[in-house]
Image 1: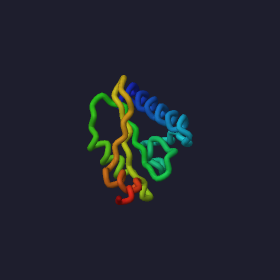
Image 2: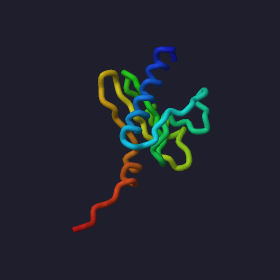
Image 3: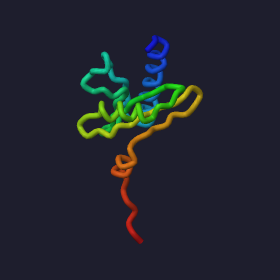
Image 4: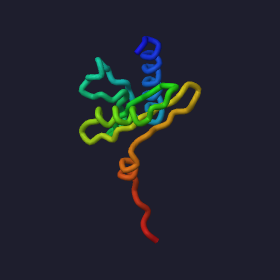
Length: 108
């Protein structure tokens, strides 16, 4: 990966951390050394989630999810947050994980 790509990735991680903070969460980038930090999340601040941030023009959701799933630990839900240039941010997670965090509506 070239320097320009790394810098773009860092900017994306800082953006997500700032968005989390603006919504009242203690978002921050993790220090990453060759991908082995003890906590491999790109950004921390949402308890119970492993956040992988991607700023790419080529969307490779399944590759990114596999990376997040293999890096997630302690039962954290792997989430990929991504965007292309001049686009809004999106988050992707397993549907089962999404449903597990929801409260069912009482039957009528």
